[in-house]
Length: 88
Image (cartoon, rainbow, N blue to C red; front, side, top):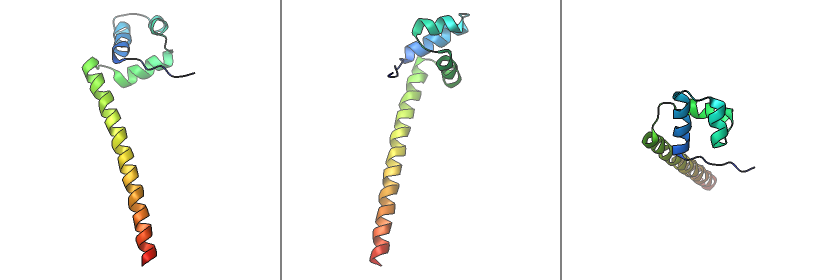
């Protein structure tokens, strides 16, 4: 079953609903997520508004790209050191 991505607005909406007194089960049923997903969102995004959540997602994507770049460069460096070691 493919995972469905929820928008920032949906995540913040769900968190705000529960903060305002709605039951977690009702909110989860309304947006179609499990209780576990809701609790993970609450742990990760507690106290964030929509702009902060968008910024967080952008920073996470950038961090992933940078980690991949570092991994690629480290692999290239290691391969070049192996080539140099064989020539000596």
